[in-house]
Length: 440
Image (cartoon, rainbow, N blue to C red):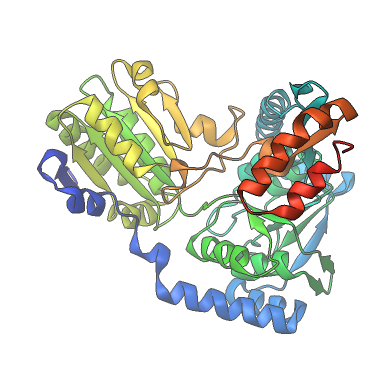
């Protein structure tokens, strides 16, 4: 039987430094060469605008940027290039994503009177312009388009600017066009990589039209795209970004009750994404680890993307823990993008999970279902971001603001308190502004 050189780690034998090393992300995600090239691209686009975007696109993707108008005719033509079952599946996924986000959109709060005459509420408003990056290099991830563009539409974003790398022939996959139609988009821009993020950051005038600078950047991507988003956010006056959303991650907690074939399939489903993707198996059973790793090796041999998966598996880890409590501790320290609970009492572990982008509970909850059609967005934080951030929701495309209304009676009651506190901080102008509301 084929085998893989997995790193099998005994968690209980490690000190704090060893545990950090065991849960380290792939080094290429912060490779200095990636950082330097991304900065070079940004500097060039800032200086030369659209021409630089075009030059880098031709150099890296073999085609200049191209705008595809998403008209009824264009979408119908794309549909005809796909089997009806494919277009039906895209529609079902789009409907589920839309339903989930319509039912979870933040609502304005009721008025809250903290002091008689002092009434406050929390109100939500959509952002004006969202730049949506949809991966499409080695695989056309039209599912990511649905997972970004539909929540943005439900939130009421004014302008959704979608960029995605072209195929090798310089065109877009018909499924990408059909998905764009389901999401109600006006256009797709075929431009990828760091140059696409730079265009969304600075704006770019191109042969087919103009890409407007965006208020916030969204979407997953490879190490180059993730670094480009980090750089964009660091610029003075630059856009904000959704989260670190780099190469895919999956951590599986399994016990002897887990089905090795299913666990192995889940691990490979993420390993095939990208050579920089990372999968981690955590178990309290040496026998389970042995069986699952053997099954991974067996299934790998028949994968069309085996070369990519094999490169990813070089960064894989199998961690042996003493208990399920320790397994949850490992997961919380790692903060995975995806967490699969393949144990006898999977639901019972959920209360112990504090940091994960998405949690899949039990053998029937395949991570792939979440990737495509369950409803919640599959755009999730990577690189430990799940310890402080959540995945894409409608609130990702909105801002909240407090609105305060105060009557004269309310001001007379609360202003002396505010004035005293302001003087306690040494801010006399603040105190005087409060005093003026008392009528004294």
